Length: 355
Image 1 (cartoon, rainbow, N blue to C red):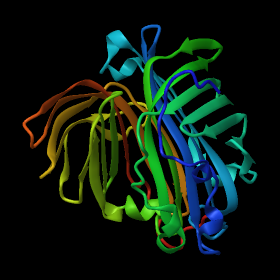
Image 2: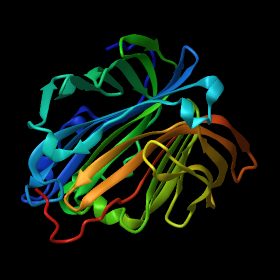
Image 3: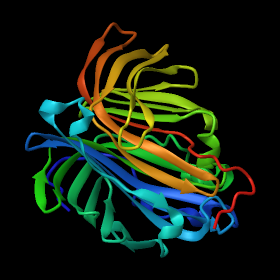
Image 4: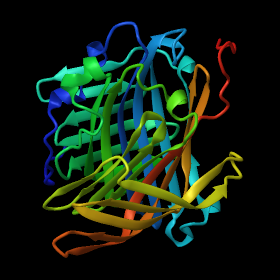
């Protein structure tokens, strides 16, 4: 793993281990070791998301398996001269059903690195650097990410995991390396991304929290400014952050607002999904006001005991402005943006056959 490019983060190597053994015994669990990367190559905008979903809790539980490792693979490519015309998106994605995956998670711990092995793909952690290697669905990658700042432990502290049943962090990163798609290699330029590490117990049932309201997860990225907004009404989560060179501005519940400006019917899935938004985060410490437009789409579909949750990956760009109390006004100009949007689909209800 190269260390030629400067990176920074306060993430400790031990944080990237599996933490399921810290949860109360006998309950449902899931944890994710996940990445998304957006960059450019040979006239394409490329968005790539990959994750190891470590799930379980018993055959009568949420995931219907004792233990499985589901591998997420989401690749979206769109010609830069066709941004916003979704018909020209190249999409490679997968459907997640825990019953179709076999085998326990393999985590290899070495003195200076932690390696998650699943299928033909590996996630190699050496904070503040992370590496993604290996092939899935004809997508082969050799990518390195380096932290841009301290991590946000927005999902809770690891020390509280046994009590709260949720903990984890996210850290924005630069990214570099190659993605090979169906035998053609693309070298990424101007690439940024996020690494996400999370462990949750049965307090976070996806079907339940997405049942009445969809969720929306947004990152806007540059090397000097990063913006985050999460709207998850079913779990009572609504907050955001503005990460600037010299400060972090938190926005608590009720201070982060998101309005859908346009929806689109996807001819590939017949789903109607949002593709343009207005976001406003407003507190005494600052204001973020921006418009976000998706330029293409990918998806995954995660199956649970009582139905499924379809989730769109919507890369795009944001424009707007950040206002600070000291009078500074920071422009948001064509900032790389990743939106993930999902909801409960086909809720089956109690008593429906699950095998």
